[in-house]
Image (cartoon, rainbow, N blue to C red; front, side, top):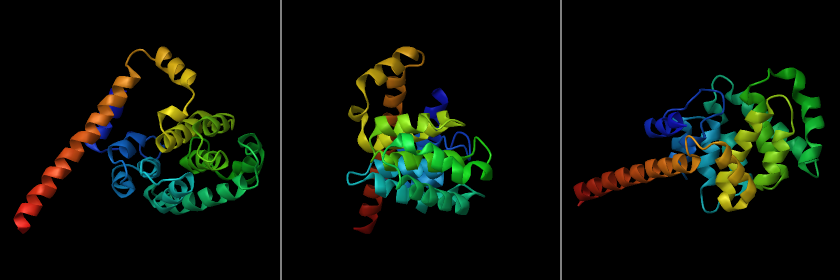
Length: 213
């Protein structure tokens, strides 16, 4: 977890092309363009989710817009996200998604690829209308690299809806199972990184304003 905070401080993705760059979305909150520069598509989606007027639809569109950052898979990833959403549109709940999704994509991508996990995560969020609980449950029941899909889904939906939208017992169980390092402490450290960067940006703007006067 120390590495997560360090990555956010350095503005550098942890593992390129694995979809594990959500911390860069936090420290670039509301700036998906900067998040995409520092990380990749998941970072951009998380950053967009922090916008006050964000919706699950807008977050998905942001993911499609910045899919090109997942080089050399970007164009293919954007298409796969769109196709996954098309499949999701025909599902009444997250439990119906697995069979038609894999029927369409199973033999066209290797496991542990963002070409599978990111579209699946976003599609589950689409079906659940952004609700973190159902989004995570749907992604966790997809099989294959479902832990990555559920992680990505939870990061994006959680940023969109906030901590209060997650079942309290989930938060308690996760914190109890991970006493060292403290996850609330990691969250505070990431928040402090964001606030420090805001202060630095404010100082830069003030300096430029004085130059223009």
